[in-house]
Length: 96
Image 1: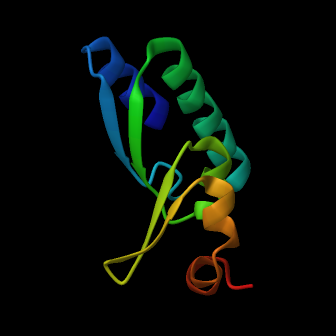
Image 2 (image 1 turned 180 degrees about the horizontal axis):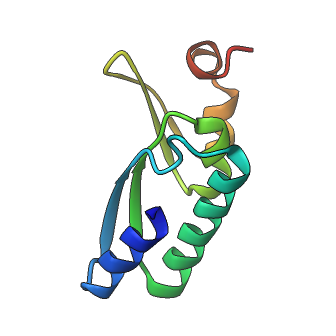
Image 3 (image 1 turned 120 degrees about the vertical axis):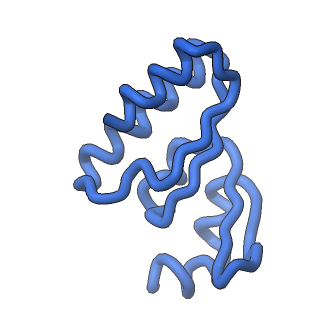
C-alpha cells in the first residue's frame, strides 16, 4: 500500500512526497524492500521524499541526509553514517 500511495502521488505530478512512518507495522525485510523501491522512484522520476521514520536503523542506508529528533528537539543532523555514529542518537534510538 505504501508503494501504491507513492505511485499515485508521482502520477499526479508531485515533485516531493511526505511519508509518515512507511515502515510502521511491517517486518524489516519488507521495510527494506519498500525503501529500495522508493529509492528507485527517486532516481527514476526525480522525486524528493521527506520521510518521518522511527526505525532509523532500517531507513538510514536509503537516505541522502538525516535529521534526528528526540523529545521534539533536533539532536543530530547530517550524512547517515554521521548520524549512526552520534552517541546521543545511539542512546535514544539504537540502545547500544
